[in-house]
Length: 113
Image 1 (cartoon, rainbow, N blue to C red):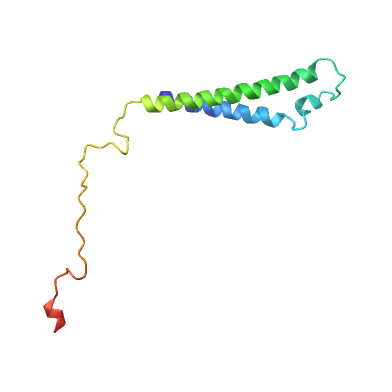
Image 2 (cartoon, rainbow, N blue to C red):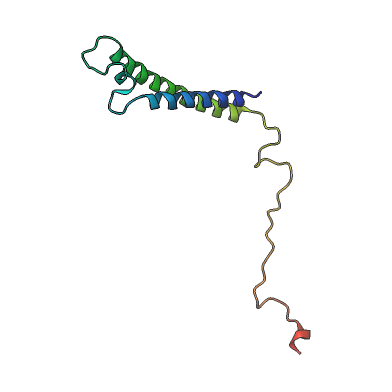
């Protein structure tokens, strides 16, 4: 199993968790906390739930960004095993054949008769 495959699996897991955490939140600020009583006077869980969801969103987003950057570094540092498209041992023919204009083309005398 390559390093990139491990990073790819971690990126997928973190992305899934980030989607779940974002979907749990309510855009109006209630989110998961509104199902536990919803009142602003309540001591304890309501404020802490939104703080936890907010911090976990930022943490997962930062972790996702770091994993993507690290996976890019592992791709760049990987030794090429002949899989790169632009690197080949075959010489490239860069000569372009000259095109002839109609005035320069030889005249076929058989077809003119």
